[in-house]
Amino acid sequence: MVSEHMGSDHTALDHMVRVAFASGLNLVAVVAETAGIVAGVLVLALVRARREPPAEDSRDLGREHMPVAETV
Image 1 (tube, helix red, strand yellow):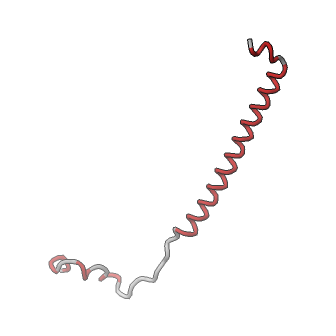
Image 2 (tube, rainbow, N blue to C red):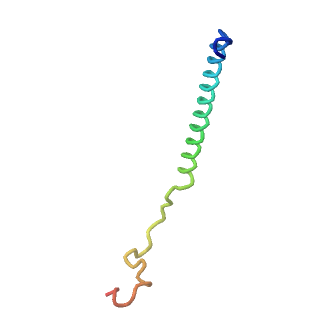
């Protein structure tokens, strides 16, 4: 019915829609890739473990908060 009246314009329109869809997917993929790379760099920069030198006597760390019965 409608496709009979469109003739060759239908195939051109179909092609244009497919090209636009593929172009949109390409754009979304590039944006997602860029966001992923930026997020990865931010994670590496902000969530790095800072290494501090050990305390002078690291065996006694936290003992001041333990009850007397558990320190023996």
